Image (cartoon, rainbow, N blue to C red; front, side):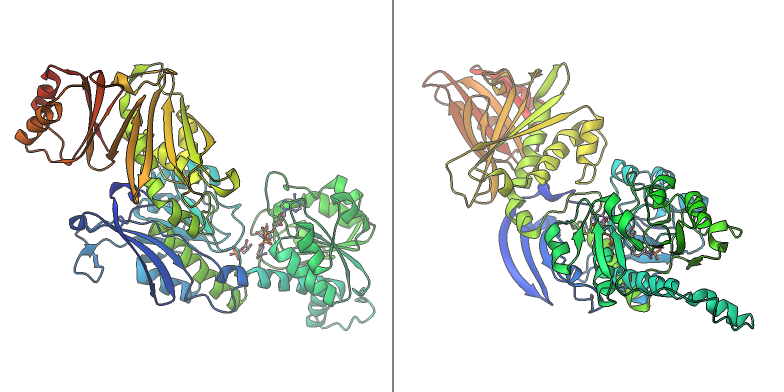
Length: 634
Ligand SMILES: NC(=O)c1ccc[n+]([C@@H]2O[C@H](COP(=O)([O-])OP(=O)(O)OC[C@H]3O[C@@H](n4cnc5c(N)ncnc54)[C@H](O)[C@@H]3O)[C@@H](O)[C@H]2O)c1
Ligand SMILES: O=C(O)[C@H](O)COP(=O)(O)O
């Protein structure tokens, strides 16, 4: 029976401790920024690392070598299976690999966790077993549908797709259950492109048919006269990684290459010497059409009776993308009428296709069983790429190949780290102040910053505010994957505004304000003139501070817990409240007083390490000049 991993998932505990020291060190080709947390006894480590893969080899394309992963992890120490080398016991994550994966990738996984390779699971088996695992690694043959996520009950932290296409993973369900989906998008590009070229050339020269005929004892020289490629027009549909590599190779064969891709930058196409054209122009002028787009709702059956009828009679079609982009019945009709002279297919709408599939059996069709990524080199590369992405994600890293979560560059992350803590803590405080009313519907977040919108990526901060707001009032675990989704589900509207500040451009954020309109507050003084609960914070020397409560300026570091207390401004108040706390053995770590005007109303913000007992709190309430107070947990 598996022991579940205690390595926290994506940034789950980042905000729980304050950083003390920032150090930069180099270790085995890794450059890491490490924040050591203030309380050494907690032994938690928040790791912000910028890693260069030491496993990826030359098979992997340039993109992959430049992959930066962002480590935002805390490792919880628990008695159990393994050891982390410091004598502390740790649990090891459980990883299920459901399709064949290269050995090099398996070694990376085994160094990190306990790995089960179970290649013949039925969908039911998968649902039954998935509860035991923290991560699942699949290729295109495993359907990771909603049932799998439901069965996992939120315990499946990561799904790794060892390849590019994620059409076999239900991304919506993954997001709802907070599972990060990562893929290995670069390591099989060349293999797929080479297979596309192999199909193109062998189709044009009837290689497969001639081979089968000879093996059947025939010598059919006149039957297998082919067509030449040189000078012919090839339309690449989807000018992404594979499409552009096919284009390069086809140009080397002397073909005239055009491409259709609504999202591809024209300069990338120009660099390869390819003209980007409209869909209709591409399919109506091409002698050969090669498909390289993903399967999405927009591309499903995009090659159908209508589009085939627009093609040049005698066109030849290659598909190493996804079977589902073609209406296969329409293709059979187009082959039968001669609109499509030949097709070479590596992928099918249903895999494997039925044994009596008319398409597979068609004399003008060449088929391979989804072999595009199947070279030794690509499989080693993919296995390493996905193993690193999955282990990174299990450590809490924000993966550069995340499919259902924003990718935040390492440099942005390291800069925002203290603000991430500030965001969660302000969210936590704000929600605890709500006493009732019509429920929280809107959270207004204002970032005062000297930076322009393009210079300030606030997605992480928004997610952390959402986490701070939702976690104290639900049993949900919020992470970067599910923050926006969960907020929406709960009917929470989070609006963001940037207010330009004069402060230094160096600091990403001067101050962060959270407002909750249309609610009552447990501490009336947090209500601003506009009638909203309003609190504001800043980062000072790397530490988050609460700096404004309603219209009162305060300054208390956001550590431990906080008591907010409004009183008539008069001498001796600090001593009276301080003594009550001292009698209760509660350590005050920070205190600040803000007032509207002398001898009028003042607010004491007191940071306390421990939670005071009920009777200590009620004694504070009994102090004569105290008008209201609230205890808030951070
Ligand atoms: N047969 C195999 O074994 C094999 C191997 C690798 C990749 N693939 C498949 O090949 C396809 C391409 O992979 P990739 O790595 O190049 O992906 P990619 O994301 O780099 O490229 C896909 C391109 O398609 C474009 N696109 C999206 N919608 C489009 C549309 N409606 N019309 C035209 N273009 C559109 C995108 O803008 C992108 O440039 C994917 O479907 C992938 O799953 C198959
Ligand atoms: O999308 C992909 O990466 C390819 O289709 C490869 O799929 P495979 O991993 O099942 O070979």
